[in-house]
Length: 262
Image (cartoon, rainbow, N blue to C red; front, side):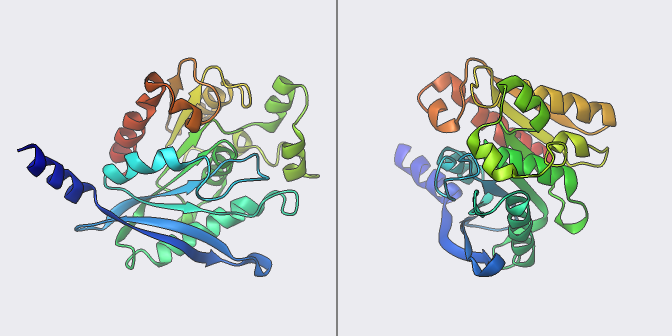
């Protein structure tokens, strides 16, 4: 019986991983993504994942791998993307790259057996900042169905005040961009997609209040959001892997996405 159940689970959760797929080439720079496509009948809901790294480091397979298994096991397709990094590429380059990835996924929805009307975006740290901004500013056919922001910066003025000064990484990405212009909190509107904010209370890099402040402002505007708090959690889902109590976000993330994108 155990072997039969194991085989059934493997069948249900099977996915085809395709790596290094080019989706855009801004200025001749090739940008790649990895795609995990569930087996079985579709079309499947999909999640575009944006890695962290302070806007200056990382790629589609760094910082975010803890997010892959729960999405795969829940039957979601996912696309983990690269984007242009600072200091060579400043704001809003990564937002443009996420938009290009979204457009690529929609255009190729039939090939990847996904539902183009059920595409969420998800990011952690710098990636959370990027998806929060994208969800607040992009409308029309490239509007995501849902946004999951793991401890992203939502208000750069508040962040500067809380941290006393911006980090060198943040400065290298923002360049001469006014802080208000790069802050998702300044673009809130009623017709935004629903947001799930996931944030640790002991985050020393992006203060926890970023998430509830953004969510409160969204609710005032008539938009939908929720904050899922990781009590005692620091910065980074990788670090959360060491503490079972911090990993409750995985179940919440999957349940929220299923409910929001049904």
